[in-house]
Image 1 (cartoon, rainbow, N blue to C red):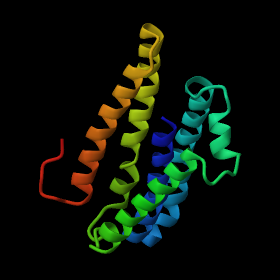
Image 2: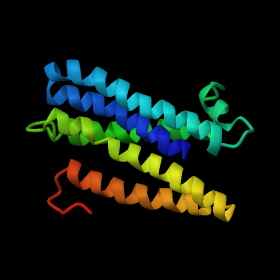
Image 3: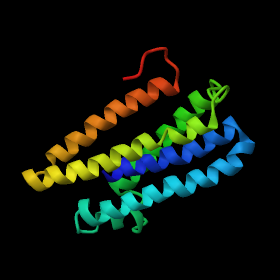
Image 4: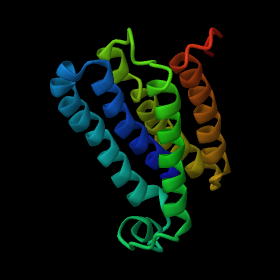
Length: 164
């Protein structure tokens, strides 16, 4: 779940760059609003993750405060950042996918992930409480992530296929 949260942060960062490419002037207003609003959701979710989901042995602290660049979570975060960066430059910049896009539409795209995170935290927490197992929590997150990522990819890159 922490990696999903991290990927959502990376997507939010690249979304700011996309907004700027779509309309630099409008992004002067839209980007700060998006940063505060999306960032508020991200901060609240991190607090929930740290309080209720992550083990109490300091796993989150190792990732965020430890400064250990070889920790598995740090390496995974860097891999996500590189992966989304390559996609950004290859598709959005390289194929000029920013042309004829609406900045308001681009602002709203990452909120699908916010919904998934909230839904998973609420329903997943409920399932963990009932079944005393995190397996259903993980399966729920994986299913929702796969469906949403596939849909977002198809829509973002205009493949001509109907999104799920």
